[in-house]
Length: 141
Image 1 (cartoon, rainbow, N blue to C red):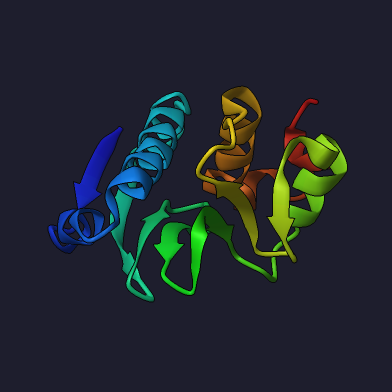
Image 2 (cartoon, one colour):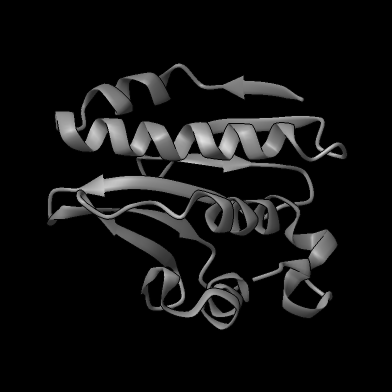
């Protein structure tokens, strides 16, 4: 799997406050690691969308990650709100995550990240157009 990265993303990561910078970088590492585990993925594009680090694949749905000054005590991983991704995550994983409507999984600085479950969410998004017709997007709780 080839990572195609826009240099502007590195500058965006540098702009985050120190404690959140590490958290958002951790989400980035999870996205890249998950992409590498999907044999069908040949490319992962890392770019900025709406001034947020965004991750795109040919048959996937865009994933974005960010910390926002308007909500200074949290950071999030965002999914396309018109997809059934977050609705399915809520159905499969319930209270394992905190959700923001149908668009994000939200973490506070002190929250542990359920890595195994989050990687399933990421994998579903990276392959969304392949798995969207499967029950629960092919995820297991």
